[in-house]
Image 1 (cartoon, rainbow, N blue to C red):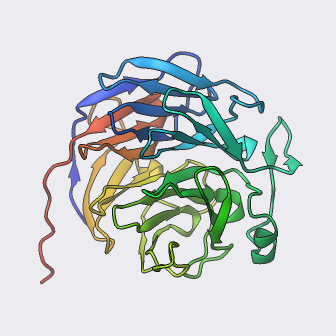
Image 2: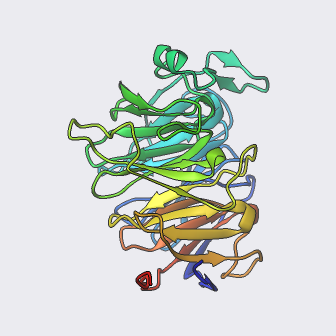
Length: 317
């Protein structure tokens, strides 16, 4: 196992008053930070110096409102995509915060206004409900504008275009390669590899482009993540740098772990506490254009920015 580092954050952003339990995070090409204030039903936007610029959302299901937003992603044009978890949809905003559209639906009322379309991860029911979502928690966008949605409760990944038109889907309920159990996060590298945080199966699955404009349905690599387990709702997340370094949060261990494409552990850092070298139930992760890594420190209502040390794996004996 890689040694635990006391990696010290280079910057910190605090959540504004009135919310709590942040999860998702994203960074755009200008260095702006987007933070999902899940308990406050908002997304906060900060400039490159960490100053709050504006907030989007507010509790509700009407256009422009959110219900426990989680995963965030920004495309090459600077548009923001939000996994609006309990409205069972993706919400798209322009770079200046204007609502551009929503897609996804929840056919059932789960009480307290929570909406979901529940398929139990059954392949036929997934096929019949391509945009019926159940608690989506993760979203990612590739360089061509395709949107990858972690449809967590329905045990699949849904892929749409940038306007919400359904393209295809991956997976169903199960523990075989290519199946999922509560996928909470998705990430992409510069080669178009798709990384899925298959949380309740305790693993990451990696899917490569198949040459048809899609990623293949059978993973090329699978590796286990210690500390991810079934029947937990602490929203682990995943991010990938362009070179394929993969970062996952392990809330139960108050750590972030970095892997290479083979699943070798490169480093881990964190540990419970409140200083700038500690994490408390970390959730969302984002890699900034300059390679720095933002981690949402969920229980502390903040996000921390870390500079990555140069690391190298020793060859196996």
